[in-house]
Structure formats: C-alpha cells, structure tokens
Amino acid sequence: MSILARAAYPARVAVRTRADEVAMKPALLLSACLALAPAATWAAPRTLLPDESAIEFSVKEMGVAVSGRFKRFDAAIDIDAARPEKSSATVRVDVGSLTTGNDEADAIAVDADWLDKAHARTAMFRSTNIRVLAAGRYEAKGLLSIRNTERDIAFQFSSVDQPDGKTIINGEFALARSRFGIGGGVWNQGDVIADAIPVKVRLVLAPVARR
Image 1 (tube, rainbow, N blue to C red):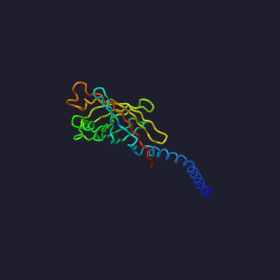
Image 2 (cartoon, helix red, strand yellow):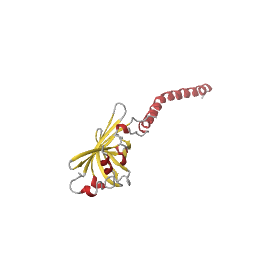
Image 3 (cartoon, rainbow, N blue to C red):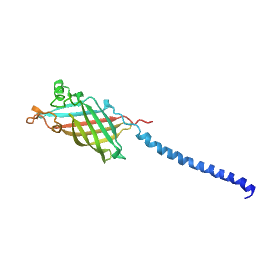
Image 4 (tube, rainbow, N blue to C red):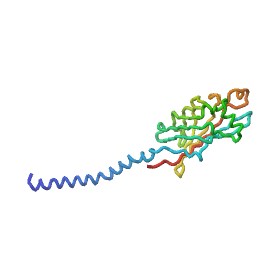
C-alpha cells in the first residue's frame, strides 16, 4: 500500500465510524426510553385515600338490618392487568373503629363474643392469587383473619382507572360469621342473628407516583 493510500485509509475509517455513531443514536435513545418506562409506571406503590374509601357491613337481627362501617383501615394494593399473577392486595382493619351509630351496639360488636377487640385488634385480608375475569373485573383469593382465626376466602371486584389518575376498587362478599366464631353464646340461639354478613368494600387509590 502506498504512503498516500495509507494516509487516506484512516480518514475513511473515521468517516464510517462517525456515520455509525449518528445512526445508532436514535436506537440508543429508544432503548433507554423503553427501559425507563416500566420503572416510571410501576416503581411507586399506590397510596390509599381513606377519606374517599369505605368498608361497610350489614347485620340482620331478627330480620332487621343493622348497618355499620369501619372508620380506620389501610391497604397495600398493586393491580397489574397485564400480569395479574404479579398483583397483590393486603387490607388491614382496626376492629375498634367499628361504628353503627349506636354506642350500645358498638360495645357489643367489639366485645368478646363478637370481634373480641381486646385480643384481636386487627382484621386482615391478604391475597394469595388474583386473576382477570374480564376487562376491569377480577377475582381475588386469599386469607381473611378475624378474631385471630384465619380462613380462605374468594370474592370478585372491579378496578376502574379515573381521568384524574385515581383508581377505584369496588368489591363485596358475604361473610359467614360462624366460620370465625363471631357472635357466639346466646347470639347463636335460634335465628336471632343471620349467619351471613354482607360486606362492601370501596378503595380509592391515589394516582401513581412518578419519579
């Protein structure tokens, strides 16, 4: 190779290398965006908005419904419609926050025969499996602990994203109080108190926190 050819060769190599770098920039930028997008979407946990959420129940005593709710509870919810097997839900309820609007009824409800607040201050649900039923509809299976007694439970719920970024979860199920020893003693004589207690859950989650 002549001296002139050897002098020109590095220049040609440099030109090709610069062109390759220019061509690679869009691909590198796209790859970086794709890598960062999931982290921005799923990195932060959803925060429960308790003032907009509710856990309500209804107990039938001699055919007359007595309604109540819990004023204090928290939840850790992660619903992934694309990967439902990665979804999880944990809800903790402060038993002592029960209210029916009647002080006497409230005292009975948290006494030893019923929720036994003195020995079991918290009721908790922890999911073991969440699956998609249809668009925005799910089934959750898990363990429900009341009065320090844990039982399997399954129920359906909806999850709807709102225009403001919030997510609203609605679900309901019938709690069989006898499975947890709720309302023992004289309360189980005859048909004074219905065994099935309808429970309605509405959880409002704050928008996803962005990094």
